[in-house]
Length: 330
Picture 1 (cartoon, rainbow, N blue to C red):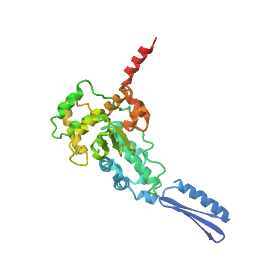
Picture 2: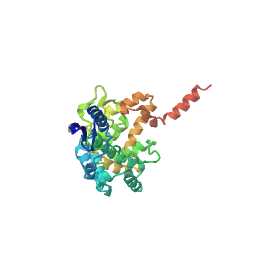
Picture 3: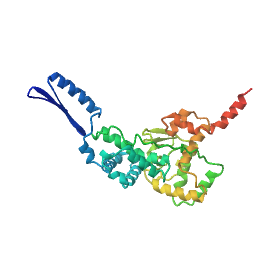
């Protein structure tokens, strides 16, 4: 906020803003003082004034990460995953550095160190919460950070997109291996994943009140993109739901971690070590295209907001396109 007062024969202006260095200037005319005050306040609103070094010197990167973890992450649906990532990051020496000394080169060194152990795609996912943290610190917490030090750190690497589909006989092997699982819900979970294309977290969160067997629909109030959607159910999916006991409000009374461990064991038994649970979603969406659903129709089921993201699932249509070209070519 600007303060204008007369000192002797001159008008003195002082601009103070939390997290930014206070500035002052003197003028002979009051109009000039008011004009300068408006200009500097506009710069302060845009965060263009120099940062207050005392504030950035007294706060370490670790302090910032802890505040973000305890006040922002706790309200996210993926809070458990991000909390684990941030707790692991807090053990790194980079978190001891004051914000005033932090630069892109520090994160570049961290990147080079981590890339010796993990893939670029994995590191990119791990750094995503930190990108958001710097935005919150700048826009909501009053820290004068003009740009995130991560903005200039490049993460080059080839695309890690998977196009793994179930091969002939693999689904049967998967179900047979699942019969040895103590938890009887593993098999119906796999069946629902292939019939609906739902994500693992979405499946274990289904409530019976969301299932409408009469109208063959399943309402998902929260999805990865933050929007609700209603999934039309196949006859096979309806049959699976009809065969399930109603033990509690949740359709599948199993935790995501328990499902993960069961999946690892049955995958070994089925000799399908390269098959991820998320590949079942890829299989389902590919099948939707194969039976003739349009991209908007598939997006209605899968929950993709950007239809361009569905192009990666269009590879099963190549064979059908060739057949159409052969049948229609003179």
